[in-house]
Image (cartoon, rainbow, N blue to C red; front, side):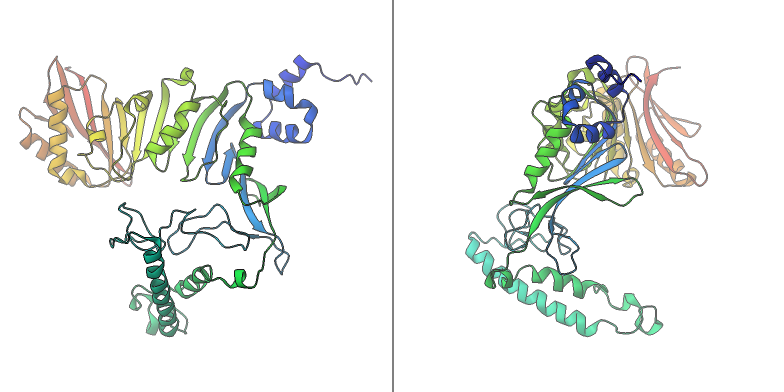
Length: 436
């Protein structure tokens, strides 16, 4: 039987048709094929970058800090989020204490001149210029939280919560799990471990999980105080020193993303940004190859006013915006994309801003093919009232079948219409078209 190994060119052909995750696996286990594997273009349907997680198609790779000398011999994850303010941490110190103040951005009580949440998830308006003063306020706040904990323990119903005599809504502001929440989080602020010089043993574990399956540990590395170094190594292994990576859909969702390899280049079709959009654009823009443009679709979560890169946005044929809508936002007023869908209902149709928004389109003479759609939950009677308001308040508007038509310059019209189906969502549509 002929058992000659594959030639270099034959190996490239075989690897070209492999699943990307199988390629990562073989490359990690067989060093001799790494050069040829890296030389073959990588094609991926979906990539998602989250906090300490990389998802390639249906497989997620997650890395974290684990204490491995627990009493029950079951590793315990160290870099968790605080249940008080939902801020997460990347690292722990040598005693296993999570830093919710500096590393996680959870400010000490007291204002530093910026609108930021403090350690307890609140906006503190008292300006305290020094850390010493803010630490004093923190100590007082901890005593207050301990009192709250004791109060909740005293007043928490001891009977079954389904008992009519202890209906849960009678305990306004007191959740069943709050006592344990305060107890666990306040324990993180004490110095008992430091006082006793207890140094737990930690390691970084890389887990692999396929859809609907249990995660399994595939790598263990000694933890030396910086989780991001492990993330950088994983990124380098997967994506560095490759020809152009072809990606159908790229999603970024994190306030703490691992460093992308400097030589990484992707040709993408669809992009999804689910956190601080401005920062995510600045981060990912250098890694998108020019041959990607124009891309098919960009989806963003626009949850606050921010400066957005219009030159980058107009490289996408369709823009989807999730989050609350404010038609007075400068970006909303000057969106460069022709096809836009607003995915969240914000009752904008009841506001004068909606009429002003329509007038602005007429004044600047939006080009043919511009089409904005707005998700809404109103029924037919409400939608008819919305169109009647447009007809009555916009000069020259003409009523049609489930629509209002407004003449514009250059033989074009702006048609505002609605589509609704029983049991389904409704859509309000603004479209610029030639006069029929």
